[in-house]
Amino acid sequence: MAAEQIAATAVEELNPFHIVQQEIRQAVEAAGLPAAVAEILQEPARVVAVSFPVRMDNGEVRLFRGFRSQHTFALGPTKGGIRFHPQVTLDEVKALSMWMTLKCGVIGLPYGGGKGGVICNPKELSQGELERVSRGYIRAIAAFIGPDVDIPAPDVYTNAQVMAWMMDEYSQITGRPVPAVITGKPIILGGSLGRNEATARGCVIVIREAAREIGLDLQQATAAIQGFGNAGSIAARLLSELGVRVIAVNDSRGGVYNPDGLDVAALVRHKQATGSVAGFPGSQPISTEELLTLPCDILIPAALENQITAAVAERVRARIVAEAANGPTTPEADVILTAHNILVLPDILANAGGVTVSYFEWVQNLQQYYWTEQEVNQRLEALMVKAFRSVYSTYREKNVTMRRAAYMVSLARVAEAMKSRGWL
Image (tube, rainbow, N blue to C red; front, side):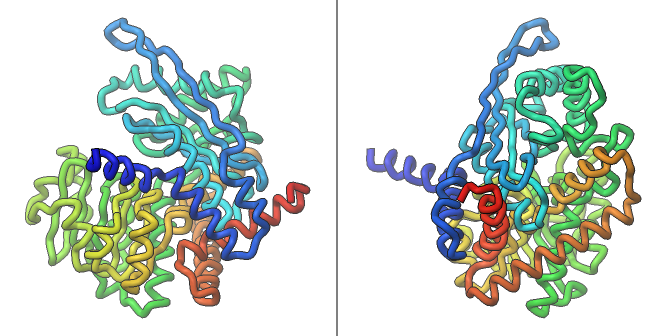
């Protein structure tokens, strides 16, 4: 029984919803904001739980369950991704919507946070089944989304094709083309140039700015990346273009390590050919825990939540931890990393490039005028640098962690919007 209680407590401590609630309360207090700000933001404004039937390729009908959380409308419509994953939970979706509010606030976007998910394993679905799940989910939540209400986007195991199906389904329901209801779409359907690289590019911009502040020469730096999906693989390429030596990466099927550096372009081709980075020629296998605790200058967790726990944090040997994933570091681990003088670039800042260019896509859809990729990247650069400067300044002036500083910057903007609306 004691062991079961300990396990239950551990799960409780890692509940992302409770983590973000606590972080909001603490940041509101540290920023000297009215207590009502934390009270209002403790729960999403609206949560939708749906179930919908899908006919599978074998003719059987299967019931799928999904969620959509809309955290706050204080700054504008809500915005956030949709993930397809077998471990999707309501608390996870609620937490991610709250982090999206904070992410939008720290960059200065006119959005509250939204997030959605469907409990499924896309790897076990055919293309036709995946399309029917995508359309079924949108039909189920159509009454609660829209360009002026809630604008979904891709997330874990969803992509531009899934967004295209969802946008098309919503447009058929409304009887008119509505490209601005979804972002992360294919370019031909109103997607933005630069969107595919935006999360990784924003992360690398923040890493570059942080490296300057701590005197790290990127030409001599090394990096380890946990997760080699869209964000991780593109971050690896962009870092290597800056002269950083990427020495270790992994994915869900294995990891590879080479102290002399991995050929990122060849590694991407290897994964495309085999489905994993595992077995890449000229490398040796490495476990997730070994990767996270590898001596390096830059560590990028680009996988799922709660990867850097307190036990792992004690052995992290990076100078910068840049959170390309959402919530990869537990609160206890965050304290340990800070005590070890490791600069943590929090998720709501480090991976905000994706939602920033999603915002650009939404703007372009609404005005039906599209920018060049250079224009998109320049606008992204300007907003990411400005956000980093604001957070880093608060971090130095208030003597708080970078995460707390990012929360304080974001919540100050949300609170100002609340006050203007008469909520406070």
